[in-house]
Length: 194
View 1 (cartoon, rainbow, N blue to C red):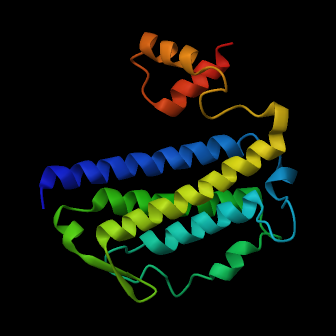
View 2: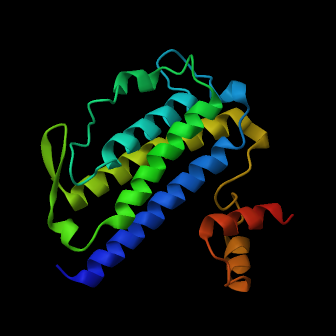
């Protein structure tokens, strides 16, 4: 394997996970505690449940990533879909635990590790496939978080992307602000400057 390609992949994947975390957190910042725990209907998940599931999933998958099955024996996945006795603070702690496990494990991977196989529920996955699987799963649920938060905030929603009808204006803003460190921060500053 080409070492530079592997290093680029690892760096890009870390950046993508960081972006999804930041996107979800910016959406979650906008909702009230009541909205955080509200489900749209009996078949829907609340924001709290999605946060709990992501935290539990990431903790399970990324703790001892290379050396133990990604479905840990102490994980109770079904309980992740019940948030009745949880608090926003307790769920934030679980969220951070999961993300910290992911970032630590992914950052520690060596080039040689990318040739290894890991297991999830007894099924073998290449390290790259396991990473891609986790990234896709996380992105799917971050999309749910963003959708629900936007639904609850309605007209008070602070966009996390380029505002509708302002693409050309945003492109000009980016051209004038090339030092902008990050796309999500650029969109935030763009929308808040007015």
